[in-house]
Length: 337
Image (cartoon, rainbow, N blue to C red; front, side, top):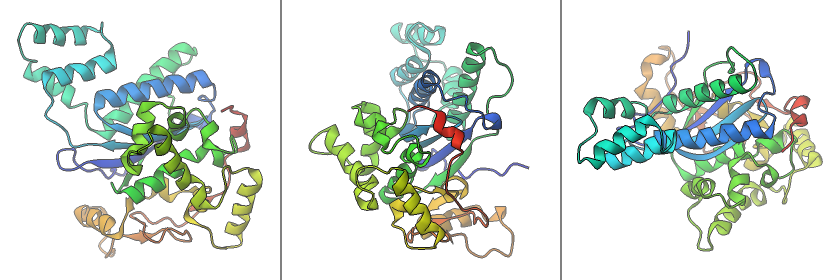
């Protein structure tokens, strides 16, 4: 039986989610750069239509991570609705032309059509479902393939919408290619939010600005501020090569002390499967709101990230085995940045 995911109503408050989806059988179908480029383009278009913000992301060879904020659902005007439809379907799409004609004639979008479109917006489940479906259709059509592409429904972690928490999860996601041994520095990886922001892409920079703040020196200062978070505070210097990774793993094996951002170079299941991540108060509030999902013997919701140096963070779902892994499969290294 599927566990219902933890979500906040888009009519009540904004919400941040770390979403993960994997290719069926662990196949490396996303390895070609052209395939990941298509997935990224579809991700941006789907986000524009759904009205969600991509904070950061990492597209790997057999899975992807997206950190997204779902804002409170706005009362969209007809022109704003048209803009979203155009961003998704294109200027010549029948749906877009129909709405544009209605507006040009001084009319209003029909309530039935408006409701149908709004149901697909400001919802992380719809965003992920449609993104995966559209990409599956494209991939199977262009690679002479049929059948399911994804191994399961996407997993999600509800993240407290607070700077320190978002920064931690964003760093974990952007360090994926480093953790996999593909690059020593995520600035050299084309398919992650930090790498795209460092190249000056506005949407990627906006994602970092949402938690780091806008810099006085333009996009370079924004990216530079986040880079300090990724590297300087981790004690890893300006890059993290194989020797540095192995040193961190040795400290972990010996149960030594790691800095939080050194720990982020390990694979941490809490950030994938912890259900809810944030302050103790945030997690306890969600626990009480969904008390019926837990057994009567459980008295509190917040759980510590056992064995890891994240003292101010709590998760809702306690994990008992393999809470930390060390390596990606070696075959992941075959993928070029």
